Amino acid sequence: MSRLFFNANLVCWFRNICNMNTLNCTFLSSVSIVCRQLSASINTNGICGASALQRTLFTGAVRLEDARQAATKSGESSKEFSQLPPLPGEDSPLRWAGTPFEQLPIAHVKATYNNTHIQVTDSAGKSMVRTSCGTEGFKNIKKSTPIAAQTAGISAAAKATAKGVTFVRVVVKGLGPGRLSAIKGLTMGGLEVVSITDNTPVPHNGCRPRKARRV
Image (cartoon, rainbow, N blue to C red; front, side, top):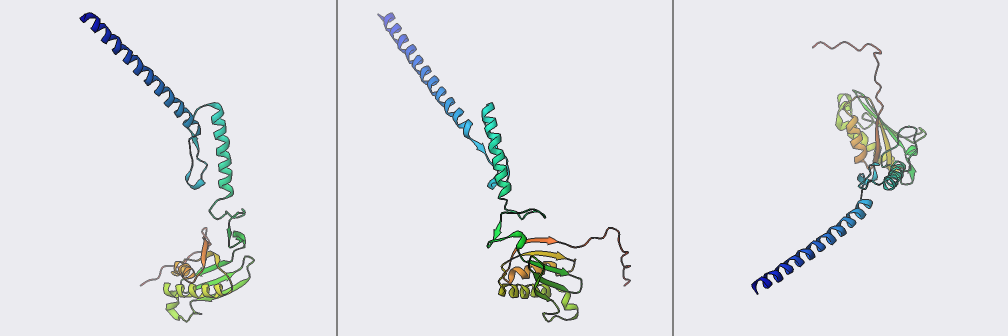
């Protein structure tokens, strides 16, 4: 009697183990199917679509070809809709108040060691606003201070804003102390600076510089 009871318990235990193995196999197979489906569709894209970085987690030949085509398309779209100003000679789809980059007014800042001149022109080079530190009332050595350059920038921005100018491109020339202050004054006066270009001439062993002053 005890032997029959032991055999019955053994049979029940064996059946439970078989059922558990069947459930585990079913669960693992379903998980593997879901993972394969997810791996075929998961892609890692670049930040804000600015780069064409794209990696597919599935290694099938067809999937890799589709991923390559998608990466090419995303790269073309990011190049067409770049958020950066265009390079010289290139067109850009960006618009500022409906105006393309090439047609924006230009604020020329000439920073010398004794004065700072600011002139706002249109895209064709026609002068719209012109001012300097001396025009704003600064005399002698005060014309070379950053405060004078900032004041001239604010005045130029106010005059340009009165003529309907909102967005400008800034072109800086010279190494005077008022080059950065003039740009700050333009922004304080109400203008939106789109780009800053340094057009300072650099000599390639040209004229001999002056000798150092003895003190």
